[in-house]
Image (tube, rainbow, N blue to C red):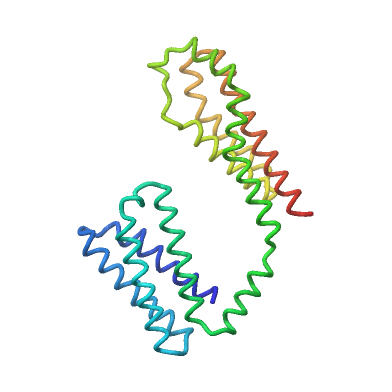
Length: 241
């Protein structure tokens, strides 16, 4: 059952993200992609499910869920949150349809496989990533608040205005990478992340020529690295309990 779900998810990803965007007509493309998904899903279901009627029902349900969600969520999917919500709904529906199509023995095997997963470790790792994102970002902003106000008061806001929320997302990506390397036990990767950030920042610091700005960037970088490493170590420690 899990293998069948993975096959159907691969078919969906190929159709949704690789094939559909190159279609000139979106309406015609949606229809063609739906037909293609249904055809490939029919072959996948046939290889696993014995009842041909169940295969037809599951294939039809899969095609309908893709057609309905793709048509109703076209506009929300143009934003990141909408795209993630739409993709998650597709995965959930694909899993439910597959669970309906397979026999009880296959469902039981899939359930046993899910039960055997180390959920405590996964939850602890998830906690580490969650702490490294928004809570750490808020804490770093509070730590740098006084220096940020001092820097803003002495800088030319028009000429040094950053992209909207760019720094926040750079911090998210930086701490996500750091947490990943810490959880994998690859601490040299943390040094690689900090080195890469330093290289990209070097030109900005050189052109700026302000000691105050340099110190502010260093404070933010070290604070972000500290929170990322701390969250990673916490997740790793809790996962091994």
